[in-house]
Length: 207
Image (tube, rainbow, N blue to C red; front, side, top):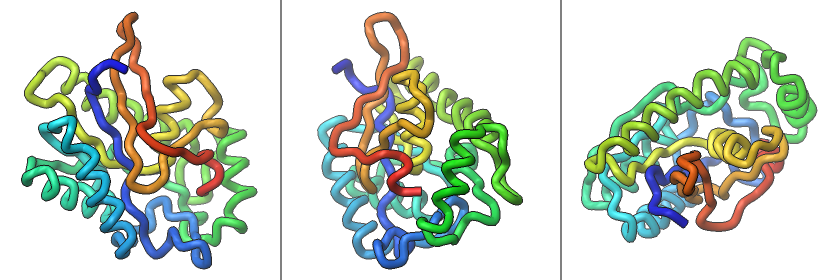
């Protein structure tokens, strides 16, 4: 695998990730719980071998806190937030128990023009997230001072990058477990590629 341009990290766990209380998080804004803090610390330790230069995260608390912890693990490297890196706005579906939200999330994936009530469609989400991410990727690609860059985001976002890299439907994509890492790099033809650095789960497993 080529040297990474971006190392994308899924944020750590929250109370809403617990099996007995698993809810669709979306733009809900819970902080990391004790497990999530450990997820972030372990991710920071894994990232040390790559000598990252800067961290970007979404402005949601679980991303921001993950970025803070990883920054500390890496010697207090700088980090900034970017609204465009947020996960999808699932509107009124946010906060629902996963099992109740699942049929509507499935519809959201299968009908990418359909907007979640008071939220955004899959197409809306991708048209916001991809450009925000690609700006970061191109910055790191063009300037060694930013490379490799760490981007803290969400499982759904990393799955979207995987789907684009592998040219598969979004609903078939994979994502890392909380605290997991993906390496994004250029292949021999100059195309952006993604490889996970650990175990993954289906994007629809954790709605």
